[in-house]
Amino acid sequence: MDTEPVRQLTDEEWFRIFDEADELGISFILLAGGEPMLRRDIIEAAGKKPGILFPIFTNGTFMDERYFELLGRCRNLLPIMSIEGEREITDERRGEGIYDKLISNMDELHRRNLMFGASVTVTTRNIRQVSSDAFLKKLSGRGCKAVVFVEFVPVTDDSSELAPGDVERSYLRDEIARLRRDHPEMVYISFPGDEKSSGGCVAAGRGFFHINSHGGAEPCPFSPYSDVNIRDASLKDALRSPLFMALQSGDILLDDHDGGCVLYEKRDLVESIINSVGKI
Ligand code: SF4
Image (cartoon, rainbow, N blue to C red; front, side, top):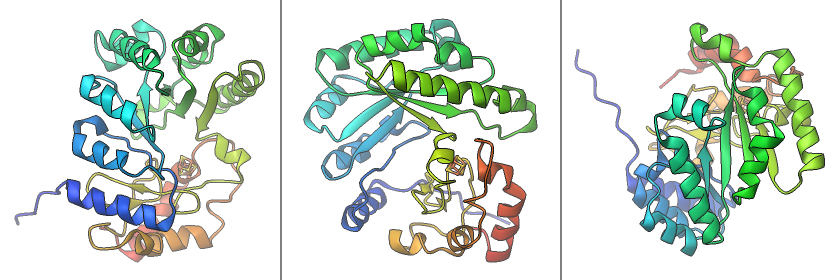
């Protein structure tokens, strides 16, 4: 049987989402990928919504003069560039020459007095380097204002040895507390991790939700399940989807946990909910 290919949301569909978000008073929309800077029209449309802050999680490779100009005109667009640590580990994961491109982007953004941040995927391999004073001083010296530590969450069992365990999480938590105290020149965000101090998991519309590139409304990028597509529903209705309602009404999101991802740990339960409400 032929199945229709899944298509990405069009520019117009994203524009509608931004309009609805603006009307609902949403103040932050994180653009992530894939690579969001491949969709220039969408980034330009985001720039026209000054009431919403758009952190753009980018690999930095498509940043060019046109983007520097756009970022200069639209200060609500905040590039957050992915870096994995020093040159060797960044190039090993992201490709030869990427570290130098990121450093050159940072220098250009700094020269133009534009705000930017860095995003680091924290693994068992790079945890000590990316939380070290040496690495972070290098970023702040180049004008970086925020560092987002994203804990590696395995999607397959064979990559699970890279996922921080209890010991590494506790180490990272202590290091971030130290950095916030001793180096307040940058903002440090940990994900998952900060959920513990903000009263539990904030997915499924409790604090935010995720729209995937095909329009599926998901609790969180780490919990990629969906029972509603934003093409067929308003943002307001998507927030009331049966899956989101089930997650919000139980104690799943609020369950005490050790700092890892609650919904990843409880993926069997989320799958049973999605099977009972009907997945798309
Ligand atoms: S689903 Fe996991 S990563 Fe997402 S907000 Fe909840 S605890 Fe954090």
